[in-house]
Amino acid sequence: MNIIETSQLTKYYGKNRGIINVNLKITEGEVFGFIGPNGAGKSTTIRTLLNFIHPTSGIAKIFGMDCTKESESIKKEIGYLPAEINYYDDMTVSDLLEYSSKFYEGDFDARTKELCNIFEVEKNKKIEELSSGNKKKTALVQALLHRPKLLILDEPTNGLDPLMQQKFFEVLKNENKNGTTIFFSSHILSEVQKMCSKVAIIREGKILKIETIDNLRASNYKKVTVEFDSAEMADEYKAEGMTSKKTRGSQAYFLYRGPVEKLVASLYRVKIKNLNIQEPELEEIFMHYYAKEEE
Image (cartoon, rainbow, N blue to C red; front, side):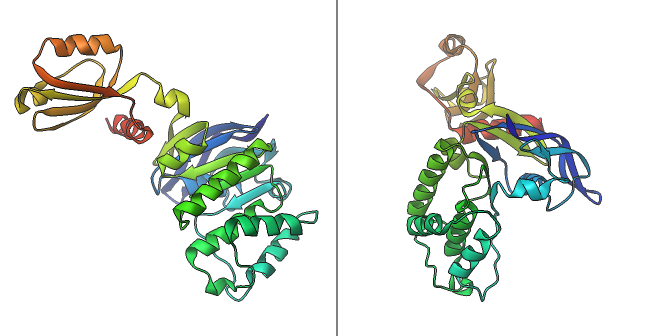
């Protein structure tokens, strides 16, 4: 079953681009990464899914229901963490969480207490007394307290210290084991690599690539460093399958896609001092896709 499904989803703000023809299919139980720099269209996609803004054209569904027409029913089963947290300053954290829990059917006192202990939330403080990190932790509790079937997270670790980030990831993994589908939007690729099984890469409102993390990293790309006899040789060297080449003195750095033996044979014909071939980081693959789009 597809928990989230969009078809040609498009949003313009007047003449300004939001997102263009976004097609996504996110299955039940998946941890799906949505990656791209700030301004790429991640938040616009999320706000359209949540019916905070209406699409210019296209279709968006969650749980098989229309995101515009059946938004009220959808939101009963969703936990949402926005990138920016804004609350009424004069409310206490306890009042806020109690108020939030009343939107859902059930008793969530024990669950709220458990989450507040995990994230070290001080329930007696007023919102105005909280740092941005403590507001984010409060928002995490709010998003999780009703055990949603779907979590939509927009830049979720902003403001969290490294220790709290680790606790957050542990909670997410546990929620996912219990069946929660997670839509994880971020520009921090190491987070996506740590959490997600599949990713969509978005730039300037358009999806460039949808791929599993494993396939993205194992798509025959290798990170190659070659030390030549001279800087001139490093500048002049070319090989089929080579991309994203950079040089520094007599060293050349590039991504390579293709049979390694062909690369070695090509390098055998020139004078080299050293060769290093290793798996690239996800970020390097990510930047390669951006560079390819620009070309």
